[in-house]
Image (cartoon, rainbow over all chains, first blue to last red; front, side, top):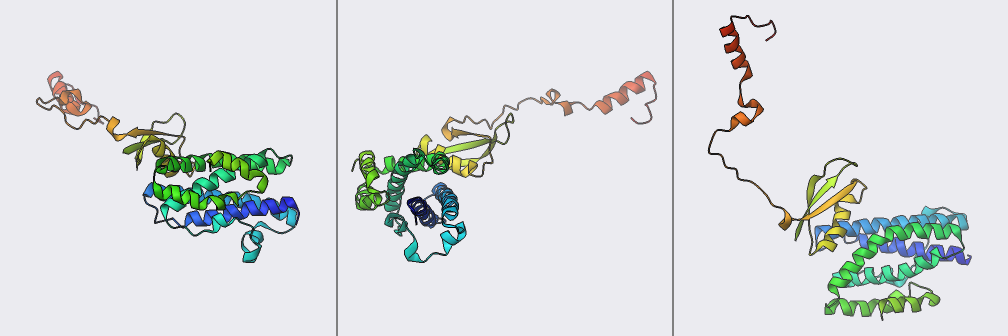
Length: 178
Length: 95
């Protein structure tokens, strides 16, 4: 598998699995408004995953559904951060916040890429991510002084680094301040 | 804080009350109203108004009979009948 397919798959897998995890809050989020927001964010993420799988499918001569659903568990390339089963709010928000920061670094790098197809998709994803970031930043600001949130962020920080390749981790550390 | 949400279905149309969102501040209200009232692309625009900003009027002074200010305050049919009687005029067939 070439580097491009590998990058597409790992990014798609992150979005698919995180979308799944975010959707686990449906019906049990702390407020009705948050329930809807999480469902909406989850749907967007799965939409991003689908678009990325479509590109990967062309590269790998298969189809998006087969990539999304039919691989062996060991073949998925998602970061451990998105696999964590977190039904506790401080950790969930910490993960949303850290993932959005990491994903932003990743998307910005893709938008600068010479690969016009990939850069174009990254730009579309970036525009939709504006609302995910707004949501994550609102919550992170609101919970900033809460000890449970701060310790959740510290606990998940190593996982957050794992979302990115080594060349982008420094940028993430600069932005998050950890 | 409760924010009342008004939505505009199409450009140029009036904003209509659609519901409310409870949020700690305007920034959360914005994020949540977008999801609650716009995630399906169903609104041209939204207005978010803190309920405290809404000045409601529910009581009216009603001491005198002011029905003369309303279109249904006069019975035209009755007054026409009296006028025709006085003039000795027969009403048209379909009145």
